Image: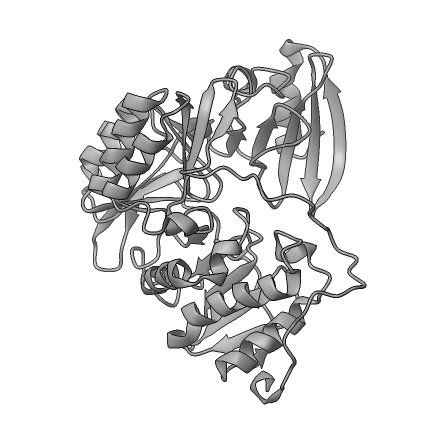
Length: 425
């Protein structure tokens, strides 16, 4: 019983062997813009990816009137606006605040929460995580301590299906089949079993305990020299509740496929993907027009439209959104590349589009440089631009590179990539 243990407050160790950060986290936000080659960039946190239609329309207008007109989805279900002019920060902040997208200016970069996007829609999972999402966001914005989290710290709320539980979050809540909730801090260590009503508070406590243990010197739980088990014991001590769980179930359900999602009562929802995570003004307008009440942005650069008639999928396909689970775009992702990023060695989005094959196999992620911004977790094919104009293609499985080849001729790129995705490299 973890609740029976009394652990002293976690403190940063003088013998720390983890990562030490000697600078503030420069992760961009809605108020702290990043200067890129194509103008300023704003990253707007959307907890759980949930946007009301009116909020989505305001984001579209901001992109059109202040930026390059497009909305860029991130691997955390957030939105980036690019091509912003210098000095537009005040106007952008005012628009976002009026739309309810900035409930706390001090916490805007720490509202990083991913959630099972089909929760409550398709009958899968053991609980609807939306109440947790609302409660956790309110608790985060009310916590003075939480404002000190880095913009990279991540919460995940999994309804039990196992889709976002494998995204490497710092704090994960996962619904259990018996109505309880599992809490895990970091990627390993003990699991705490909680009552559902304690889950959001426990998640915030985990973040606050992490901050005490880090001493402000690290950004993520994985960088902390203190074992995650110690943090879990301290959360239980402060919460006054919780038991140890013997195991953490593996991720068991993939990301939503594009197409129609039918609920147990016959209600339909729509799932679409944005090619390379980029949504044009026409595509965003199509989504907001088809939506009924809200949109849910996914960590896989897709959008769920809850409780929408299935016949609206045709209109979304007509504006270039991915609606077919057999699309060659499925599983293909990329960073911004040239000309938006000065560090990129290639126009990787153009190369990715020219190298599409029939699809299938491992996901493929294109990076313009060795930083590999936005690359996915899990097994995938890593495609990285090389200084000589070619690409390094690697198969990553179980966190390790299994095979690598170098492609220096455009005519070979599609074939080599297809071989890597189907394990023939």
